[in-house]
Length: 376
Image 1 (spheres, rainbow, N blue to C red):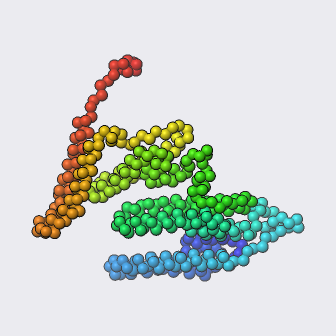
Image 2 (image 1 turned 45 degrees about the vertical axis):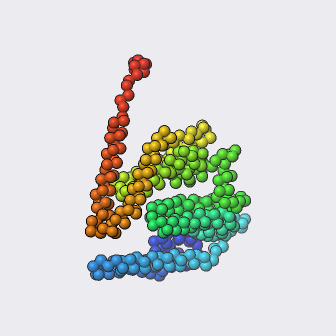
Image 3 (image 1 turned 30 degrees about the vertical axis):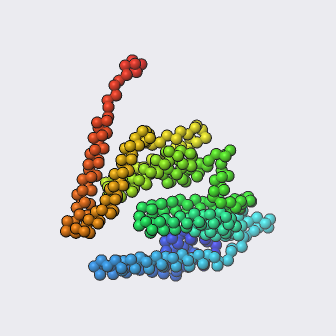
């Protein structure tokens, strides 16, 4: 094994099985690991074809390949950890030189290189790199934020049987990338001679505030959930409406099986996210106005009450009355006919009624003669 090679580069190259080992001079492992990795996939594909599409063999081949990849990575990590550090060459004046006797412009010692490598390597698991630097509170906050969010989302999905909550797992890559870059910044500060301060993420956000103002970084993070960033800025009405629109649209489109209108969900999310960023940019420069998305709801409480009443009756009928009638009179296929015909009829009737209401309520605006004179 060649000890003068870059360990971090070997780790990155080893994402392709065996390439990192080959880079370090471990040629047998560099050939054996990719052969076993791709061989297991190939055998799985051949057995899948030979058994006329039995998915068990294909999944088994992929699973064995992933297991070999993990063994390959673990083998490389153990080899890098056991590798002795290369002594630094010095000239007569004590300056670092390379193997050709030339002065090195980089002043990092081998111990600093190894510390940097181990920190980055451990940071692939959020929080471990900070723990290695002695930042216990910061490391634990990253660990809890990453694995806690994953655990809660999986738990809520399992309890409610709603896979839509798994969408919030998209926040995990953001936490992972932020943790990785934060670990690199911390090791750079330490090697530059700065004193590291062990504080949690929320303490970091509080320290970033200016004159007691709300943190714009936290606003950006909270805006990932529609309405949360607005509420943090004090825009309660706007944030509440965005949150209700987002979650309510998912719920209503799901129970009414309106997959045609599912495009509204990402539209609402993007609108809420970028609106939160705009409100954050205005914060501190001009007063924020809590203007709701849909104005005048207070003047139409009767319509809102009727809508809630109809939704409640619909939910009561679909979840209780129709299943009971379908069980009592199975020969009429009540549940099947309702979901196939009556539900479609109700949704179509609501859409037609809403369209007629908008079309008939669109009054023509009479031109103002004074404004026309000014334009002329």
